[in-house]
Amino acid sequence: MFGNLVSNEIGLIHLIVSIFALVFGTWVLTARKGTRTHRQVGYLYAVSMILLITSAFMIYRLFGRFGVFHVAAIASTITLLGGMIPVILRRPENSWLNLHFNFMYWSVFGLYAAFMAEMAVRLPVRTAFSSPVTFFIMVGVATFSTMLVGQIIFFKNKKKWQEILSVPTGKEKSSLYVKDLA
Image (spheres, rainbow, N blue to C red):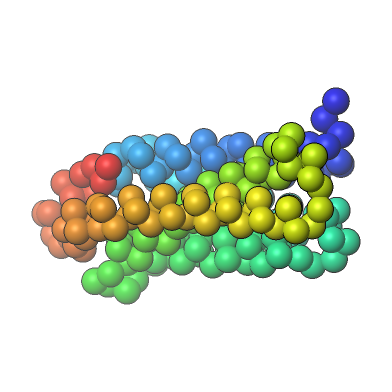
């Protein structure tokens, strides 16, 4: 029944942690920032993404070798590290919060793009025309469309978010972190 969805144990792990990452990532992106729950769910997202990326590098079913989705996993690693390192180190001093937010935003939207690409290639219409060209067109359209939506949302809210993300000092710290970015 699930033969086309999951081909082995690594694929099953990949599927399960991708669902967790989607849930945690969406929650972190839409919920109030800077709270204890935000940090806890954020770490759950990061762990889910580490497991997802690791499992991606163990899957070679599609090409039998390193492929375009492994390159996407490298990009995902960069956005995840780019978002987590500044928040853990609180460096650079005047821009760590902005770096954290920007990289984590794109980390989650990259995950959405991967999800949409995965769904697109599993549509019945795609299996009716199952050529490599159709496959990459479906992946490209799904990825581009998702990232375009992310870009529109990002630029629509950029000014508001930049005001909120100015690095706090002293007493301002606790109140700033719990402002909504939505």
